[in-house]
Image (cartoon, helix red, strand yellow):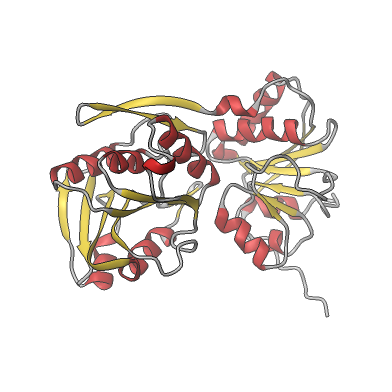
Length: 347
């Protein structure tokens, strides 16, 4: 029995839906959540574990860009579509990675919202020596086409490092385009760390939820905590691993783990003395409270009795009600008018 293909939901997919191209077997690179994409016959290539798991649950193939080359037995696709991301630098990385991974001459389409910077790909492609033509535009989106070529730039060059000073000591951090706070310490994270430092001794067994570049994991591990660091983004997980290694906090020095997880999905029934987080509330350009809501609502099940959830968030975000429902109460540890640090304790 066959089922009708659902209509495209997002503007970029609606633009693709009306194309005459046969996308069977193509790679959908950095795809959005869209039922039209998930019903087709292509392959998802995404750093987002939640996207990959959704495709795999539907019996579809999904690949991580940090896996080494094409999986064994996986043929090169007849073409690829790159959904231009919010981060322009990340879009450039995807281009370099595709040029290094797929055969020269492979057709590539690039699609994105005009307000999201898709028109800038013309200059990027020209700088890489790749030709380009515009295929279509609608729904305030544009679609361009080129062919991949050898550009002589290693995607590994996108990895950078920087240092931050906290409590009179310096930490070295790895960074990659698309990772939260790329190349700098976020003001909210700084407030969270300063607040934790003022609270005195760190908990022993800590979960760093949404680890990003690893600043929290490294800071906590240096203070003797056993840190488990998780993130849904493969680049963030790798950045944290590199940051911990750069500070001599990997291996035996960090008995915890660093792994991909869609909120708590990879943790089973494990519990911790504390969960710390600067949770995201954006999915590309759209506001998305889903991950933060799951973080708060499911936190009591992943805390030991007396364990605490400590998060930092923009002051305007609607987290107090969620904390009240999940824990029956909370306190504000810090408030600088831009950010608040909340603590809720499992009774």
